[in-house]
Length: 457
Image (cartoon, rainbow, N blue to C red; front, side, top):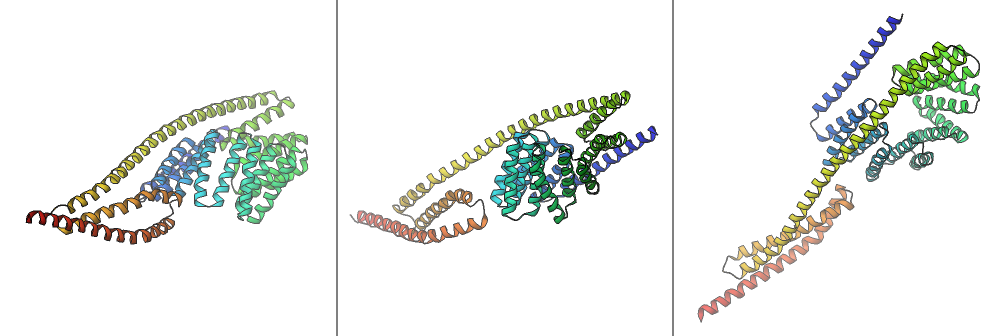
């Protein structure tokens, strides 16, 4: 029997790895087929999203590529996606300050795009980061901001997730009355929106609240009701939490066999799906349960499992911290290089503008100089027109960055502004051109007359 179990486990693992490899290959193949920059950004983001759970460091690097390309082609939506992916990767690596930093950068872009739903989602993500840090006040502050945006803009899905997370934050902080109100609201909204994932999660969270209140009958009811929903959506992490709640209730009721059955089920489910923290919780529960029954061998076996799992988690957490620091430093160094390149490019543009600014008066002086010499009248007119055209184009070029910044790079606003400027400059250009040509012509005629008088003398 043991051999069969091991064989099945190996087959399952091989199948899972094979399926994951196929999916990654498919995503990379899709990336190689992309002919446009926008298509490449989307493909890079999809890859980053896939890697988020398995390899947050790879997810971050792919998202950074998507961000750089999006910035280059001024694809704001791609920039927002990439920043969100980078922030989530930092959250997974437990670098909470960096996660918040990148979520805030995403919010700045979404404010430019004026999409309230995305702004609210980013605020909710920040709330989850602060909740991971156990910063309850800050977590609630951002979660309520998301809820306010949902109410003001009538966004039912955002409101659903905001209420669920507010309830969860309150429950983790042991503010059970508030937790009950918001979790119940989330459950009712999930039924209206037919969102099975949130229905199952809400029922599980209500079970958690009631078990903290020592109302085991109600907790049992909510846990049992959540299981079909969680199974249907394959949310095995929450399903493990729910079944461990049932094990705790059976222990309180003195039904030890049932408590052991559910705790072992949680351990197997969590181990198979690599939810190590849940597996540790189940092992710790079984250790205490077996000790209370004087089953020392079983208690010792699960204690050894618990210690090994805890060591594995600790080593993974340390590895994540090292990865996070390394990647953050790599990104910082890259940002320094990019900043220097940008500064060099801006300096180059400023020097070019300065050179053009110096050239314009030189052209005017050349035009005046030519008007004093015996040259063709059309050449003088041409040099005067070129000088004026350079002046007016220089003015347009000079004010373009200011207009682009104030209009948030909106092509519609920019074209309207430049049409207005052109409507003012064009008549002025014609009048100045007419005046300049006349002036140069008079100077030329005057010098011709002076030369004639000199020749006659």
